[in-house]
Image (cartoon, rainbow, N blue to C red; front, side, top):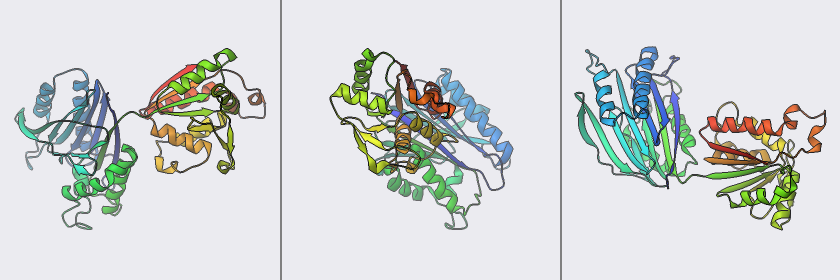
Length: 383
């Protein structure tokens, strides 16, 4: 079974620079391709060089051009500074195929950190010439729980002249990641944790562009969300069966919906008064269901929690209210299946309610678009 390869990017611009001189391009094509490029210097020129390198590399690989040809073309294309004899743009390419095999190519970037649990994996790097440039290549396989971190020079040099005379350094970063990476919830939390540490080492004034690409491999997490009962009551058993037969976690949104699920399962609904919140009704409990919550209000508030950029699961992991718990489940899941009943709830037809609450289908569709933009695989089925 192919693993979910979650990719998260966190960046810091050099102090007083509006553009980052590093660039990351990620594409899905029979697996996952990640390209990190670091432009020489900083500012506009570095940004243009790094973005061209990353975009061109990713586009050629996605287009099916052989890797050797891509590397040869990139190596021949990149100019070299005549004064410092450095490439104007360096790069790291990571490709993870659907069979969990991985290929890593590194050109003048810091070596990638490849970990399994709390240890770094011993991955052999072989040097090979492409277009006259020496590139380090690695071939390996990933497993559930493995992590990979790609960084630009700005991360390795963090704290130079301050906390660390010679910068944070690759070895210190490796020790740090061995302690932190296995325990972070996901790639996004890991990337942000590392970014925050780098910013502290720079005392809030980065001396160079700093980019972190965190990658975590795992068995895909699946969530099925049932929203509202179907139009035809004869479909009740079908919908509940689909909910229960699906893998992973299960959430039921709606009072009438939860009563329907309990009836079909021969269970009872218990109200959890401890979860009562000033802005949302209490959640419930049904044996075999991970979350039982109010319907459209919960969905609307969960969508509000997710808007304005992907939040961290840390903000919702220990919430007891329905919207908070649903937000955490949506952030945790890689694949989300919505089962949406079209039955109209008379309570939502009051002219005193906000328009958004009366438009269940629209809220679900908007939520699906938002989750898709965060890299989630989302499906919707109406009844």
